[in-house]
Image (cartoon, rainbow, N blue to C red; front, top):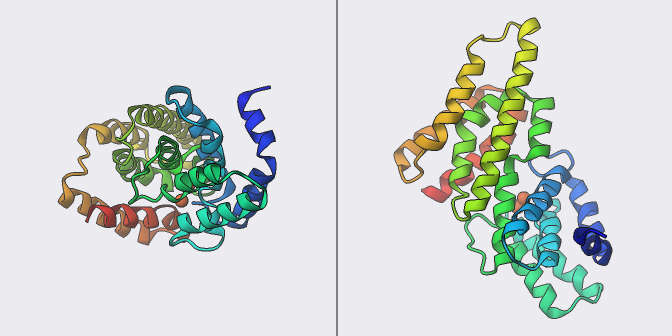
Length: 256
Ligand SMILES: [Fe+2]
Ligand SMILES: [Fe+2]
């Protein structure tokens, strides 16, 4: 049996409760269950390179956003509170409860996790901000939104990931892949839809430029990017805006 299957079987009741609770957020493109699955998968990948307690990481990954079913602001503490309650009911040891709790509450942007398990969950959450499932949903529901995600949002997100080199490698690997897939979709659409012939080249240029050019320490530039993004997003439809504006504002507030 695969090690993660063993962990899942051992903690099935606890993990199933998390999945049930997070399903409440199904209509929220930022926090639907696909995002949780992305986080779990990135945690597994990080664990291939970083030694840590796998069981704690997996439980915390499933539970990190459960509090979103109750509140957005302060959802990290809410996730931790409910997790503690459920773990106590199921008879987990105090030490295990405390370690899972710590990894969950410290995935907050402003927090610096005190344990390696917390750092892994937090990094996985940041990479998964635009992970496979969210990207897929965006392509299906709002492909036009991806232009700005690629141009503006990804570089900002990447700057948040500089803590662990391996996280940055995973981010580059997957974002490059998603951008390539997106370019393929544009190519296929071009025939019938008369899309801008330069769009594909623009996307390629933007993506190769932003990793080298973006400097989060330049607050003025950061501010102007955020303002421009909000300006653009406010002109397009609500679905696109809810993908991007909250995260942009959150990042901007952190830098300010
Ligand atoms: Fe969260
Ligand atoms: Fe999350």
